[in-house]
Image 1 (cartoon, rainbow, N blue to C red):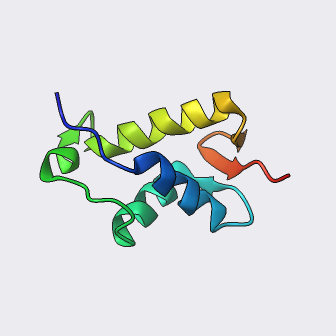
Image 2 (cartoon, rainbow, N blue to C red):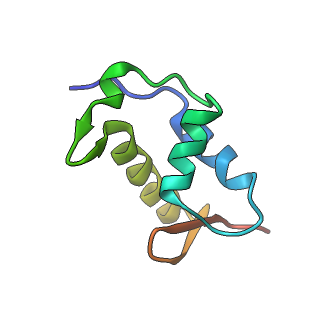
Image 3 (spheres, rainbow, N blue to C red):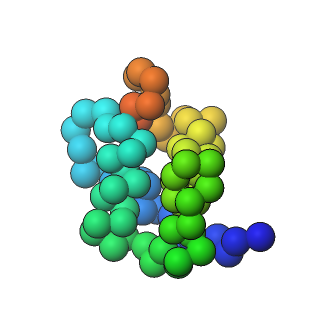
Length: 84
């Protein structure tokens, strides 16, 4: 089993908060990697089912954030922070 990406949930929150509108999960992944919001190990970069492994983790966490009511999904593959 691959080690968890420490701080990934908070990195996703920061990426979403930096946008006023909805963004795609691929854009969130790109920002996390490009801005170095978390350390992504070479194991997490390994391609699994056609994409880097940490992308699967990002989508899983986005689903959890939706269940908690922190994030909404206005359309397929697009995510946005709930603003109060």
